[in-house]
Image (cartoon, rainbow, N blue to C red; front, side, top):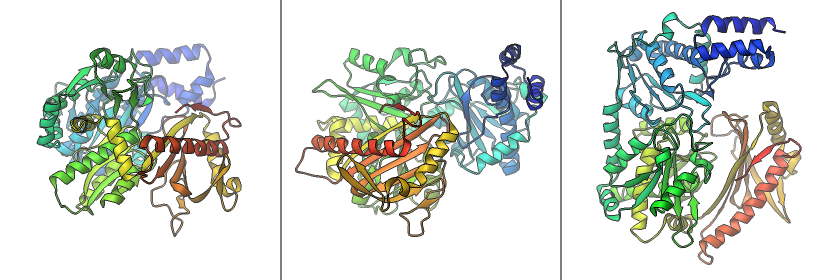
Length: 606
C-alpha cells in the first residue's frame, strides 16, 4: 500500500519530470506495485556533498537523472547569486562534461539555466578532461565551475562535480549551503527544461579550442627544455590507454609538444559510454583494467604503459622488466615517490642553492609518508591533508598566498598535481612529467623500478598495503568504528598488538571523526574532522588506518611500514622482509578491528 508521503512524492515527480524513460520507469514500478523500490528512490534524496553528486542514472530522487540535475543546477545558481552576484554576472561559470551517457545533456541543462539568469557560461563544445575546469576557473576568473562526470565509476553511473571560485573543489560548509539552496529550489522552472538558448545567445561561449592551446603551452612550459631535448634524444615509446575516456587527443597534444611518442590502445582510444572492453574503467584496478594495454604494448614491443581514467584526472604507469619479462603496475604511492623526487630534482636544477624552507609538497593522510621522509633529509616541508584533492588544492592555494612554493601533491589513488595553475589532480600533466622522468632514468641505463629502489636505498624502505572490505550496511559501519574507538578494551592497557609470536606497542591513536589525537599534547587532532577515520601509530614506524568511503559501500584500510636505509642488505631482499612483517601486522589488525567473519564483510584482495 502507498503511504501518504510516498504518494505525495510520486505525484510531485509526475508533475515535474519530463523525460520519457524515467516517466515510463515510474509507470512500470507502479504497475508492479513495487512500493519497496519506490520508497527507496522517492523518499531518500541523493545528497550534495563535497564531491557534488555521483550515483546511478535512474528514476527517482536518490539517483542521477534530468530532474535531479535541473534541481541541482537551480540550487547552485541561487547559492552563487547570494555568494557573489557581481562576480557571477561578470565572469559567470565554466561547464564541462565527459563521454558518459547524459553528460552533455546535463551540461547543457546547466548552461541554459545560468544563461537565462543573465550569467555568462563557458560551455565546452566537446568532451574535456576534468582538470580543465580548475584551469579554466583560474584563467577566466569564473564564479565557479562544474564537470559532469562519474570519473572511473561503472557505466551505469554519472556525477556532477562542482568547483569554487578559487578553482578548487568545494569543501565543507560550501556543500551544505548548496544542498540547502537545492532543497529551497526543487520545483523546476518552465524554462529549465529548454536548452534551445544554446547557440543563440552571446552569454554561452565555447572556450575549448583556445583553452586546449593554452593548456598545452602551460604544461610544456613546466618541463625544462634540457629534458625536452632528452625526450627527443632518448625516443622512448609509451603505450597509452584513455580507458574509453576523454584523454587521448589532449594527451597526444601535450606529449607531442615535449617530444614524447605514444601508441594508443585503439579499442580504448575514443570516448565510449558503454566502456565496451573493460568492466571497471579504473586503471587503479591493475592488470584487469590494463589487459588490452599490456597486449598492445607486447604487440609493438613496448615496455612502458601510461594510462588515464575516463575523465583523465588520474595517471597510471606499468613497466616490463627487461630481464624477466614480467609487468609491474606501479602503485599510487610508488608513483608519488618517483614524481616527488623528480619535481624536487627539477626545482634544485633550476634554483641552485635556493633555500628549501619555503618549499612544500602535499599528500593525503592515507597516502605513503615517503614525501615526509624525503623532506626530512632534504630540508623542505611535506605536510598531509585529509583525503582528496579538494583538501590538497585548497591547502596549496593557502600556502601560495603566504608566499610559499608548492611543487607537488599526490594521493594514493593515482592522483597527482604537478602544475601550479591547476589546483586539482591532473592525469595529463602528470604523464608529461613522468614520461620525461622515464627518459631521464632510461638515458642513465636504469628502469623505473631501479630508480624506485634507488630512492628507497637513499631515504628509507617503504612497504604499503591497502585494500577494502565491502559493507553496504551504514549502521554496521558506524557500530564497527564505535567499537574501535574503545581501543584500550580491545588492545589492553597499555595497548599493544600481538601478531604471531611478536608484540608491538601502540604509541598513539588519531580519530578524525571525533577530532581526538592522543599523540598531540592537547589531545586535539591537527587535521579537520572527517567521516569515520581512525589511525593507529605503532613503534617501529608502523601505521595503520581504517576509514569509511564517502561515495562507496566500503571500509578501506591502509598499512604502512618504514625502515631506515641498510647498506648491508640488498634493496629487494629488505623489501621482501618488510613485506612479510607488514602483512602479519595488517592481518592481525584487520581481524581484531573489523572482525570480518562475524560482521560478514567481503574482502577485495590487494
